[in-house]
Amino acid sequence: MALEGSEDHLAWEARQRTPAAVAAVAAGLLTFVGTVWRALTLSDLPGNGVLESLGRAAQQGPVGELESLRVNTFEFYDDQAIGVLLSSVVVAIGYVALGWALTYLAAAARARRPEFPKLLVFLPLVAGTLQALATVLSALATNTAIGDFLAGSRTVDTAQEVTGSGLGVFASLLGLPGALGLALALVLISLNAMRVGLLTRFMGVLGMITGALQILPFGGPLPVVQSFWLLMLSALFLGRWPNGQPPAWRTGNAEPWPASARQRQRAQVAAARRGQADEPDPEPLADGPSPSASARKRKRKRR
Image (cartoon, rainbow, N blue to C red; front, side):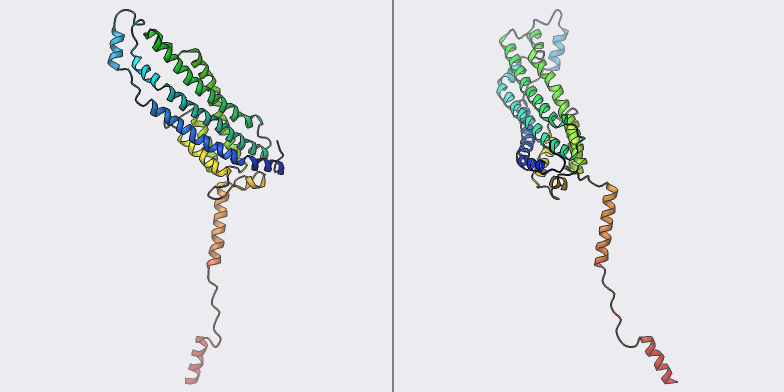
């Protein structure tokens, strides 16, 4: 890792800036598009009727050998298996791209803050890869298990095996550290990048919120906040930020953002200086005697 503010690291950042920006755009678009694609593919997925389920439960004797009520659901899913798999691949590519973009930001933050752990530089790429593998393997496991169910006896007992396949369990175990790793990486990298001035306060806070949403998906499954943040991150990487790229990207040194109180004080001082500059200069006094002096002279003449 290059030293803080070194020309070598600035040159490395310049070479990797465009690929990192492309990765951020790809991550923002692919994770969103893939999630929407999967949701639309399964939007008409039939469910089980409550009355039918209650009636089945009220029947006497074992029900394990009866035909499962989920046959229609699994048949529809099997018809859409290719779409589900392809949408999962799109999301998986987005996760890898997310790890790449975060790794670039983490490397830039560590160059300006040496105490930033080196392990966190590589964490997003590893976590993103794990999450990508888990996404694809989960789709494959579900497709395979449903295919086996439809080719078999289609009973209640075999239907329970669909969600408990070995590959599906492995995918779930693989996705857990992936999701936690991405959440941790997003929070810590955004925080430290904001501290050294690589991210604005808005982008830093939004990045930490994006990390929290990896494990607490408030607002639904669509990664709206994540996609928005990644697209803005790409613009920042390329220097297309509305107020210009933060100085830390140009100097290679930590340029912490001033506190809010200090920013307000600077704004007040600047406003006061502008007000003084706008005040008109006092008009010079006209030559000759003043009005009061002329009045006194006229009174003396009358006497």
